[in-house]
Image (cartoon, rainbow, N blue to C red; front, side, top):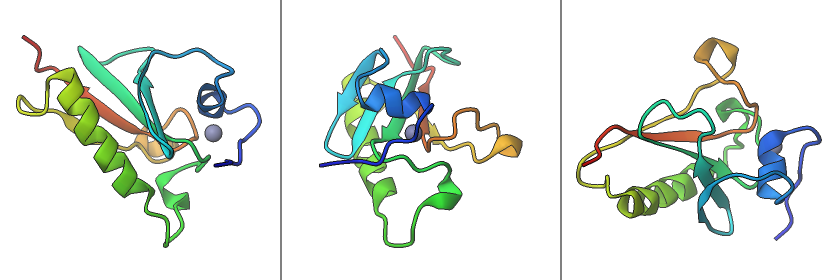
Length: 113
Ligand SMILES: [Zn+2]
């Protein structure tokens, strides 16, 4: 599968293997890796391989958020937080705290043993 990559997008570079990241999950649509500046003991970024700048830019027929949800289920199980609990959130644009303009979902949990 081929994806449009945006020049100078650090998440596109990670998806393309041109920048290192601590990758915890991959499938044909999604790459997930540890946040470089974690805000909690578990802080994973779930990133579509396809460059989509913000949540506002998802096209109406795109099911990418379903793929993100399925990835989150698996990552939460792998990290041991599926039952203990975790939080998913998306920052949209600068006013919402978005820093990297390639759509990503934060998976955060402070529930560690
Ligand atoms: Zn990108």
